[in-house]
Amino acid sequence: MSIRKKISRKRGDSVGSCRHHGGTSSRDLLDFSAPQNPLGTPEIIRELVRESVAREDYSRYPDYTYRRLREAIASFYKLDYESVVPLNGGSEALYILVLSLRPTSLVVFEPTFGDHRCLAESLNLKIVSVPYIESGERYEFPIDRVDELRKTADRNSLFILSNPNNPTGTALSAKQVVRLLNALSEFVVVVDEAFFELCYLCDEVSALKLAKSYENLVVVRSLTKTYSIPGLRIGFLYTENGDLLNAVESSRAPWNVNSIAEAVISEALEKYSSELRSFAEKSKAVIRKESTYLERGLRLLGIRVYSSTAPFLLVKHSTPTSEISKKLRELRVVVRDASTYPYLTQYHARVSVRLRSENEVLLGAYRRVVENATPSES
Ligand SMILES: Cc1ncc(COP(=O)(O)O)c(C=O)c1O
Image: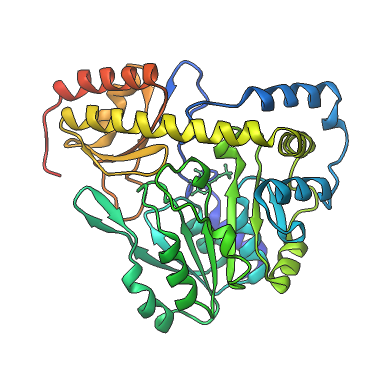
């Protein structure tokens, strides 16, 4: 099909119609729809952004080799600097990997975050969707299906999973990740650890530590999540596979990380590493406490809550989420309708964990909505 035909076939679709993400730009609403660090942006980073703007860093190109940024990331995370690829947020990894590896299919464990389906549709890639297993009040990773997937997947498949997973909050242990990497040694496996630094129940061993032993492994990290800087856009990809690194480097846009993010994150990681580590520890402690508080409060209201290890909770209402979220919005609170995720229903929603005073507002709003709602079949 010609390019012209491909474009005209899409005319009439609204922009990004296959995309569904949380987040609201309205400052009047209390946003529980975008999962982030409830502590917000650390003061160190705010100050460095102000300094960067004062220096007018935005008026120059970033260093397209990102040497300083790579070195700062490598030193902070104890990695090999040549194997670090800075990203415009963790979400950029999917696009770069698909462009550089040209897989014929994407194997994804769903429900999960990402634009895999959008991308697959536009590039005619096959999607192999493997469901998480709902087991009581939690979702489990389908680890026992891995051997079967190895046998049935196309030779040129790219496997992608998130640890911990958004929106189920499921975490894999390092042992499970190792089992997966061994079973899928003929395939490239992407482990997206966007929320790892905020995951209060994750294994201490990140997949970053496995990269030396597994050439089929690509790890993705998002600093956007850890430091609550989604507008700054910063993450990185890590693999010790030299061929893969070369392919990724050739597919990366030359200035994919902007000059403010480049300067701020380089300096923050170089000069304030212990402060940033304490911030991440404090964040995890707050998330653990507030997650327990929210979970209990929502359950007392008769809402089903799935156990999570990350700064958000997957919930299931007894009336459609569209009705609940409309009423919550009238009370100036926004949650993420999760019905757009594969395998979830019109009754599911994702709720971010925020600070106590904000969580109280959420529970108060839910109480008012749920007590006036008539349950339907779910
Ligand atoms: C699992 C996962 N990976 C990546 C991202 C995107 O992160 P970033 O803002 O760094 O692109 C998200 C965002 O919610 C996510 O849930």
